[in-house]
Image (tube, rainbow, N blue to C red; front, top):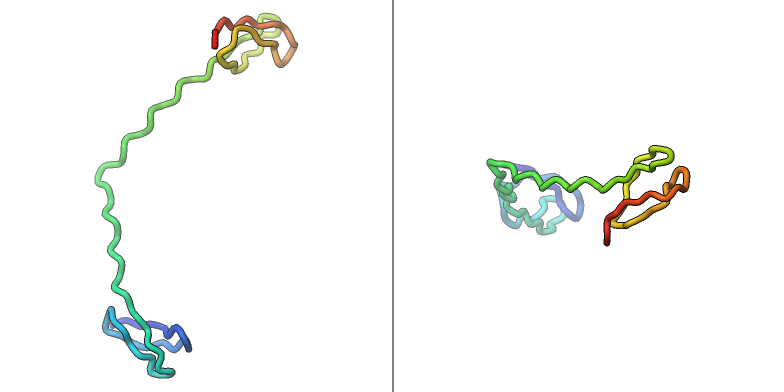
Length: 90
């Protein structure tokens, strides 16, 4: 046995299981659906995603700041403005 609450008047009443039941207080027919079956769990976790390649970096010859660069031949240092030759062609 389980209890359900009427959708119209909120009266709680006992039912045997899934089916259609009239409310004893107001007569509204309430449908009780069967319990959902849980999804099966995986016994083995999925493999971890491949690690990303590290971002390319450059070091400024003037101030020694190391910063991330893209595929570029030359860039200005964001710290001191010096030209930094990266040497990577897009």
